[in-house]
Image: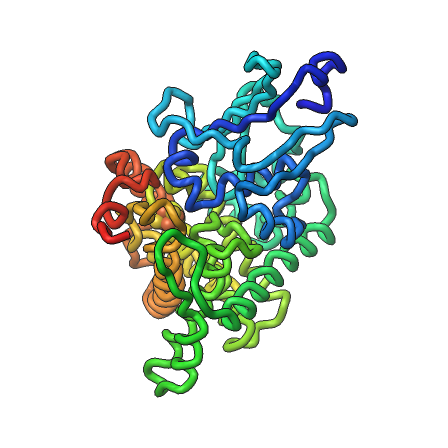
Length: 418
Ligand code: SF4
């Protein structure tokens, strides 16, 4: 927007300001929203961000400069305004970005909405230039019908849609899946090697490495669940430390899927093709949850983050191991169902407590959902994915605001010592 401003308006600009509202303000310090906003203003992209710069941005006093058509603007923590928690904007997580003149007059501004999982929109946004899906569906019921009538597999339908919507070739889609898988695996590896305190205003120790090592030495009964938990903890701790992670479906829940990915690769020894297929099934479930309910803790609580992550991971595991569609759906259904009602109550607004351990539980539940789904007779199961997603939305809407990422209820207030 600033790049497109008339020359005189740009030169009158003295300060860029980002005003955060709602949950972005209430829990933004703990979620490092200020750092992300500054990194964006400095031209960084999530997938390729310079980790050295991201570390420098930890210090809100440190000054950086961004040049827009030759006009320099200073950036630091002082450009972020932590505004009202309650507001009238149409979306819970709102940011208003402004260019101000020296006398405080607003030269231009834009209202942004963070819609969860790294997605965002803005007021007056033109319709996206996207192609029409080859196989349109808005529910699992419709997806099942398409599979039945077209004779196509889940993979074929997902790939055909992705190609048509994004107007890219299969090679690009596969490359993106591989990037996500590699980032998840690297997150586990890195997290299992790190120790010490995580950045927080209270003492909070990493534990993934310790649990990993103790689990390796434990008996067979304990070992598997301990290892799976340690994989999820490793990525979640890395995320809390500001490391690169994949929003699957969000950063708060970014450890659940990698734990199952790591398990598929290192325990089940699944080939890369099977893992990519699993990712497509996870994408199907994530899309349905986001489209028909939400993946934002600020909208539906943690059921929409860890619950959806667990459902995606369960579907991924089922599909990657060759389960039929009804078992894949059942695994996702069971995993999501047993997260219904889970509130979002991060202590101090930091993605630490309960978030990090919740990822371990999300992974364990995903595994368990897969075990149950593949062992029971799927046709006899009562609930289906569409109905559980609808229940998640209804439950989220009924949740009192203090349980939707405001840091004002539940564990966030019970942990009085923090
Ligand atoms: S409690 Fe759950 S939804 Fe809330 S920030 Fe933590 S992981 Fe995200």
